[in-house]
Amino acid sequence: MKTILTTTATAMVLALAATHGAEARDLRAASGAPPAHPSHSHMYGMLDEVLTEESGGALGAQLFGPEVVSLPQMKDALQSDLVEIGNMLPLYFPAELPNMALAGELALQGRDPQVMAAAMTDYMVTCEACQEELSEFGVAYLGSGSSDVYALLTNKPVRTQEDLAGMRLRSGGAPFSRWAENFGAVPASIAVGDTFESMSQGVIDGSIASVADLLSFRLIELADAVTLIPLGTYHATSDFTVSDTAWDSLSVEERTALARAANKLNAVFTHRWSAEMPQEARAAAEEAGIEFIEPDPAFLEASNAFAEADAATAATFSTEEFGLENAAERVARFEELITKWEGLLEGVETPEEIAAIVQTEVWDNVDFATYGQ
Image 1 (spheres, one colour):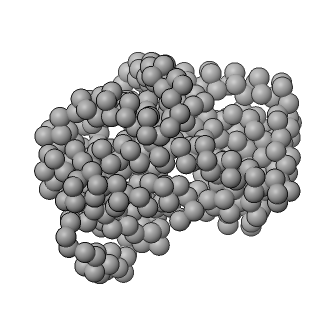
Image 2 (cartoon, rainbow, N blue to C red):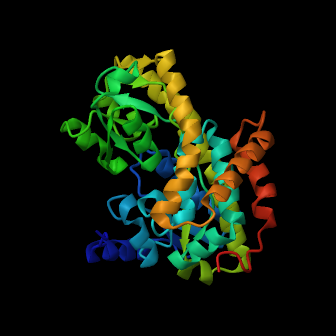
């Protein structure tokens, strides 16, 4: 069902925007996430400051919360220009964004979040079919970020494959659902913002998710155990997605500044989501009595083997579900980029250094007079 944005939400955005300072052009921006989530606190929450700096004061941002635009509403919000720049998750709309969905189908391959974020960005910017897809969708793409390596957050301990039998787990996409079904669990397609309510009501027994979700979505109040079995990364994001109307209205210099700001914040966001926040969440969870479990070796081996084989499944799935031509070649291209970025980022630790490398390797090669058109 198509999400409909209310006239009340539209009126709220316009009223708030009218009260904001007029010195710079302030882009209406939405993270779609609650304040505790790093996409709000460390990505969109810092956008006004970083964009103002990068644009020399020409551009700024006015941030609206999930009460105005939630993640499932982001497509409609961008296409209607309710917001001009937003955090869009392509796996909510896989049939309309099959190339991005294909990259998301490779979630189980993820082991290094910054590598996956950079590979995703490189893939999307240099892929002609991807750019055509985004143009038809009505947006311009300014990079991706990534979660930490996903784990199991559950209401009972999971040590072996047998412990998963019959458990209902929130899944953020098809690859996580395939993994769950393979090991006897029942996946549930539930928006991440609904995880707490679904788990508290007994609809699900846990979530395949970032450890940071213990804090971001208050699962620390419900989970009893975290099983540290590596389940890949959520890297199929479009962190800064600009509506065509807004993008077309920007000068080449303004587009370049916005891309630089987005690139810096993508790295900061990924560092926060994949490094800092999981450590904070684990410390808080251990204090709350939540058990952290290393999986049984046989379970771990079987899970890793499934993840390795799933790349071929992802290609087949994308061909059958979306009619995506040359899916196997596209999978191979993405895997090449993972290898490329593993080499480029080896030994690189700070988000500032990572952003500088991505800027040089990707964004400095973009012609912003024609990009996103």
